[in-house]
Amino acid sequence: MGQFTALIFILLLVAFLLNVDFIFYIVYVSVGLYAWNRWYTPRVLGGVLAHRAFTDHAFWGEEIQVTLVLQNKNRLGIPWLQLRESVAVELTARQPTNQVISLRRRQTIRLNYIVQTRRRGYYRLGPLRLKTSDLFGFFPEQVRVLPPDYLTVYPRLWTLSQLNLPSRLPFGVIGSRQRLFEDPARPMGVRQFRSGDSLRQINWKASAHTRDLLVKTFEPAISLETAVLLNLHLGDYVLRDRAYTVEWAIEVAASLAAHLVDLRQPVGLVTNGVDPLHQPQNGPVEFDEESGRLLFVQGRGARQLVLPPPIPPHPGRPHLIKILERLARLEADETMPFDRWVPTACLDLSWGVTLLAITPTGNEVVCQALHRLVRAGFNPILLVVEPDSEFGRVRERARRLGFAAYHVTEKRDLERWQRPLTPSYV
Image (cartoon, rainbow, N blue to C red):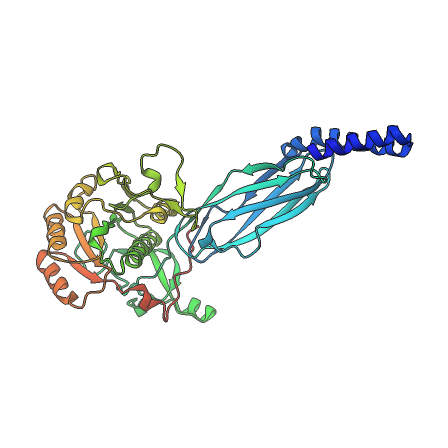
């Protein structure tokens, strides 16, 4: 600014001394350009409309295309416009998100980039910073920010056989070797053959047509409620593999909920984990600057932690999406230990509900807590997610106390030879 003014004065002085019309012309043009840019530059970004278009939820492993739509509503073009889109590191954008473009008058452009979802979570896309200025550098750069949007990545889903669980796990409240009663007069469709299915249920015509074993499915004759009890008390997990096992426990909970909804059964979720969106906030929620995931601010103290409200059992895929959204955001923390949390967690559940207790260990304290639920009229099933070389003792202890216990294999063993379940719940 100061250098430009000094140059104008020097040109005027030279023009008056030499009385050259061309120099006067240069001065007039320079002053005109300066006045125009002084008025127009601060108003350029006000005439630019911007928004994102994308699917705001995804299953693990999906690729999501994000479209940035920019529309120039000004009567004049924009010589240069710099875009800087912030994308979470863990989403792995496949295209560059920083570009410099130009916009003609009334022009609309669309810029696409694809993100890969490799970890569950609640992520922030953006903010988008728009920057421009005049061509001559007379004025400082003008900046406008498009607020961020949010993407939910659901946990990875596995089949029961991939979880090392029998396909006829007794979810129901009735002690029967048949997991639930199916009415052959009410056919529902077909699905792929799973380990444990009866050969009499195979649909041979459909199998021959598709060249894949398909079994018949029927409408259940009764509706059996199930609640997933997910223990995310940080102190119950072994420190060495804590982060790994917590993610595995959440994936097990999501897979069981999806399996039950696929059978059109009511399922709910109760957890002692922490949902950052359900914590008291003095301001907007915070995100980790490196990963881009929703951040739970530590150091508030256990007394101030608020457990997320239970999701009561209901059937249907919209209800499953609600459960998966909660599981996508959950974090383990020093909340309430399993044995003190379980009795209060089940107060609002109906008598006879099946409780799928997902917890890292099956020690004496955990088994006694589940035994009290048996005496209260519930049907608990223990699912241990941490490695245990002496799990046979846990199984025998659970049998004596009146409930079943299963050891769910670690996912690091599964990933060597199996692929995750293809999602079909959107």
